[in-house]
Image 1 (cartoon, rainbow, N blue to C red):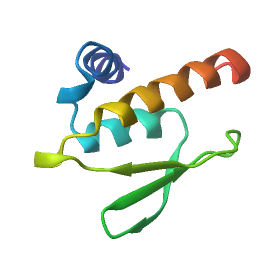
Image 2 (image 1 turned 120 degrees about the vertical axis):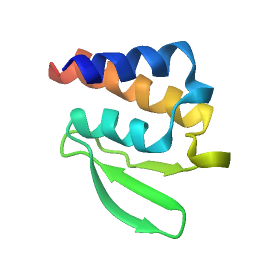
Image 3 (image 1 turned 45 degrees about the vertical axis):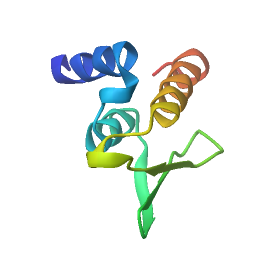
Image 4 (image 1 turned 90 degrees about the horizontal axis):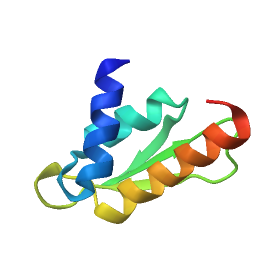
Length: 84
């Protein structure tokens, strides 16, 4: 859990510096899973969350800033509504 907390702090402090694979690890810790990958797009789904998350790496394998904020917002929603 300490590694997850470290990744969450990093995502909140500097979303522009988070690697895509670390963003996927964060989402997977909240029960998202990779449903499919088509080209550079990675689609994550969740059994309780109705929408998909569509991720795509920016330059150098980094996650796009808006996608980091999107995942963090969804995690907050899951924590509020589903007790994650």
